[in-house]
Length: 297
Image (cartoon, rainbow, N blue to C red; front, side, top):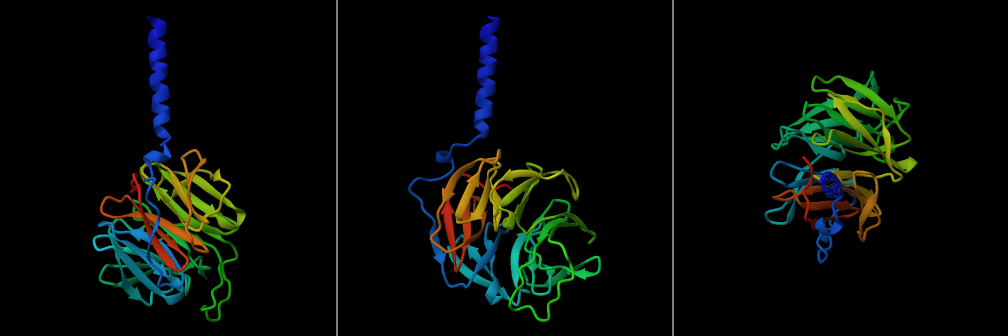
């Protein structure tokens, strides 16, 4: 009896372990391919879903923010003169936080288009050009500040000599966390207490444990792939971009690839009524792909 009981317990443990690794057949529909919604843009970036599931994204060269309305499956202009917004993320109050790199700033934009500049310097020096951002439940934000010199910058002189990951708390205090070769995509999860940061020029993505407000563990290598943008599903799978969308399980193993017929796939997020539609920004276009999973919140 004792050995049978032990065997039964072992089987249950193995079953629970296996449940953590979701089969890709349970994630994606075999007969569904990415659908191009629009190709009217110059270069799309920064997708983020609001509380209703509509996805806002940028066309940085044209200095505009658009949104995809899932109810009508249409793309509409939200605003222009965005400070050349790049990466974006909605905060807990449904304000759009933008990496507006024209003057190295971070903006907060309300749904009625009121703009507040939250940050434009660190230790009295202009930031290089905030690139991507993730807001936590405390009202703070983690953001990357690489350096991609833009042809629209006027009289730019680099004041910040490093390319780093930062944290800004709700009071507006900013801390430099770590310097990278070229930090880019970033995403976090309150559910999993994880933060992921891509060092795109180094060809690596790193993982941190979120310990408390603004405090992270030492970084750990997650995978040998850099990424422009990224998102997470509710099972902890990480979606990286570049040549299409690459899906990695929580252990850092690549489990799926979504090809996109564009020169470059810049970013990805989940949107829609049930938060189960991948919204993909790629070169001059945006795509949607229904899935069997949901994004993590």
